[in-house]
Image (cartoon, rainbow over all chains, first blue to last red; front, top):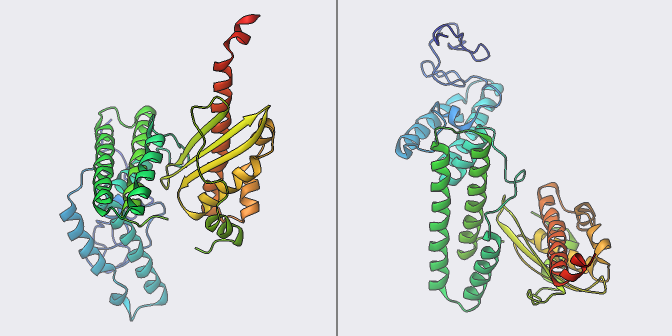
Length: 214
Length: 135
């Protein structure tokens, strides 16, 4: 079957609905030509919000530049004289863009979102942990408590570094699973879930070692 | 987030914090975690003649997780193993007035009770192999 013959999805407008503009749309919620703000299609994911393909490997500098550019275009101050509905839309789009950026720039949250985009289970739906990890977590948390009680800042910093390395390792394994040519099979989705659950535990341990959790 | 008075009470005065000898044949240990928030919980029971006579917990997590496990240790004490298995997380939610975002904390406590009992039962089975091979 020719890809050319495949009709484009009709749910999303392909051109700016503003009659005087009608330029092709790069993003489904913003006309890059006239700046018109459009109602975003429901269920737009964070990658689509930036107009990029879902992937673990993002150019973070390019993402930031795009974020700043879009933030300016969506800024509520730009539509101060416009209707209340337009102002509300600018606010909602800005807020959604912020959430998308905060999610995509953080590797753990990006992986979590990428898994959800592919229909993988959430942590609530699949609560498994790798063998032995929960026991290790209890021990590491007790270590943090003991180090804090002893006022041992060096030990706390060391635990935080170790936990950060463990989180990175789990995310690297998730990255390899995402890159598997067979992805997304149910087995691979579940394997990613398990790695992200591990990453979450190590992430919480770091927060605790920094004195943030609780 | 504002905690209910009962959560505050259990959080500031947790009951039964500590540990039991995990190698003892009459002690069951359950370690469970909530991967969505990274909380971990250990709950231990000492069983004599089918009745839970002692329960200890250690929870690393939010106030609701600590309160849920503290309450769970209070509730299991004096119950038979079978009765303890009937404790539902919804009862913990109700008792502590947990908001929807904290329901997983109560699930954790229920899972911890079940895991501890499972561990105890596994030990009992392992300690009495002659009963299984006798017939």
